[in-house]
Length: 86
Image (tube, rainbow, N blue to C red; front, side, top):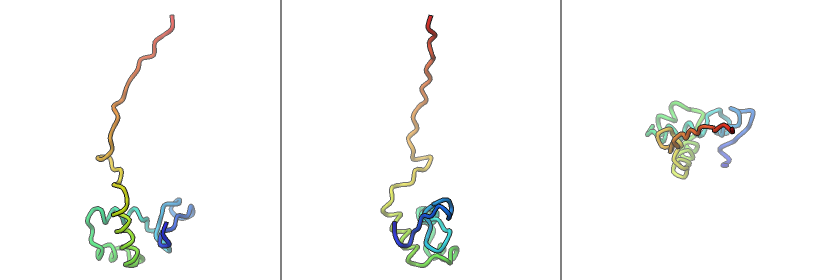
């Protein structure tokens, strides 16, 4: 992890957050994925520096696509009947 991101079990159960905040990296990354402008993120989260937001933007570019419900492959359920021994 970066020096900007920490993961501490005492802070949001170990969810990676920006150092000195309780703002989860994945939340900011989700905003970026949804097209929210950096200026709006900076306005809504004044504790984040421009470097923090730039880090989140780089994280989004490097990260795998999020495993949303729509993108997951669903296996069909297979039901099997137990046979009774005679």
